[in-house]
Structure formats: C-alpha cells, structure tokens
Image (cartoon, rainbow, N blue to C red; front, side, top):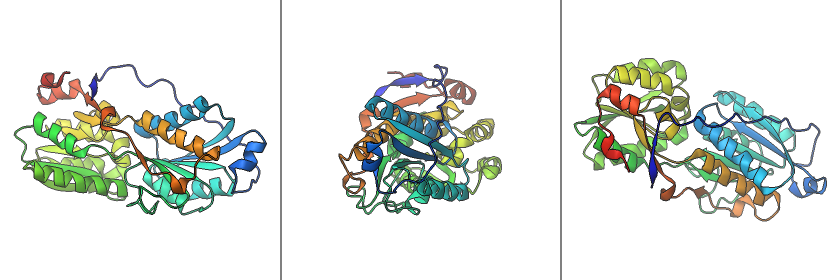
Length: 325
C-alpha cells in the first residue's frame, strides 16, 4: 500500500484541453477506415465535473498521447443531468465516432443504449454487469468494456472503525439514482455488520437535497460512509461542512472527496484508472482486440493510497498520527 498523502499537496496540474472533433458522417463500424485517413475520431461523454472523473478523463487522454496514435476528441459533459447523457450519446453515435469513452455509469448506460456497433470503453463504473452494460465482467460479449472503480469498501469500513472506535451506527449516504452507489451501499452494510456496526441509509435524489439529508443524520448516527457516488462527490463541500459542524466523521470512497473535507479513505487513483481505459481503447482502435473479448479491468490492492484530511481530523478531535507509514 502506498504511503499516506496529506492534504495540502500541490493540486492536480492543469485542466484538460478540450478539442472539438471534426464534423461529418463516418461509417459507425470502423476504426480501420478511419486509420486509413491517419486519424481516429473519439467521443468522450463525462457524467459531471468533479475531481475523480476529471482525473479519469485526464488519464485516458494521456494514454492516447503516449500511444502515439493520431486522433481528434470531442469532449462532452452532461453536468450531472442524466437526460443530457442521452442527448450527448445520440450526438456521438450520429457523428460516427470510431470509439466512445463513457465516464460514469449513467453516461456508459446512455451510450450503450444508443449503439451496438461503435466500441464503447467505460471508466469510473463500479460493476459493468450489474449496470447492464456487459453480459459478464469476465466476458463482456458486446461492444462495451472498460475499467472498474470498485473501491475497497471493507478496508474503508475498517478504517472508520479504527478512527471512530466508539461508533455504533454508521450512516450510508448516496444518491438513489445511481446503480453504482446501491452496490457500494450493500457492500458497506455487509462490512459494517461484520465489524459489529449498525447502519442506516440516507439517500438523496439530487444535489439540492444534500444539506437537508446530512443535517437529518445528526443524532442518529456516529459516523458517515459516502461511497464513490457522483452526486455526493460533486457536493462533498456541503456534505463535509454540515457533517463536521455536527461532529460526524465522513469516511469517503475516494481521495478527492477527502480533499473536499471528508476525514479519510483508502483510495484508488482515478488518473491511473482512466489511463488503463485509454490503453484498452488504443488496442481496440488498432484492431488488436475487441470489446467483447476484453474482461473488465481493475486496479490492484497495491495501488491503494491512504489519504487523511488533517484539518478535518483536528476539527473533529480525532488523532490520526498513528496512521503514518
């Protein structure tokens, strides 16, 4: 496991450059035809803007650049609006892109429902099979493959137990509209049960409900677990503000949520996750592999990083010094 990262390290460098792809219809089948003209057309649909998804996007582009292929990319962001995902998916399919990257489960579901011909690589998706994107994670069987951000929920709950040893009840906070989050909530409940902790679920349907729902947790739970939920991640500043005011430590699904005010996590690296997706995309574009035959890929446990927000720990009166090393 990698060493502890402390908040206050230099922020992730530079925003992605967004390069609009060229217009004009192209056959939907065909990386080979596009390769003959010297350039691949790649569409990107990202569910929303928050640091984890942005990092996955950046990693994907870096992998394309490192491969040396010639490409143009059409970057599209749904700004958290699932109906916009459908509109963007239709656009990218109608443009005849050679490959589409979908960042986030709702984005991947929108694209997968719009084409069975264009290769689709997903990333920041917890379980492709449960989300209905592939026949199985080991053998996708269609035009979709990618990289999973299934996070180490049991390790994160063990971390909560260590940091908040007197906790008896854990509130699990997520958006009810996200399939990924329901999966993680189930895993968190199981991990809490194994750790002797009771649980209570608290759900939001949109970011507008976050403050009220987190306020309602006060007096009912002793700590909060927030998985890699896109709505909660985008609203983590509100979550942490309200939770910290009420003395509720928040163990998060990934490091950028800790950077936003949560207490701690064991985290995957979303840049690495996106980079791995980019490597898969390059193989598909070059004709070296087909999505149907490419198992969903995961980062290993060795890639996990312990991240602690020392300012939050100090505000909550929690000693994190024993986590060093």
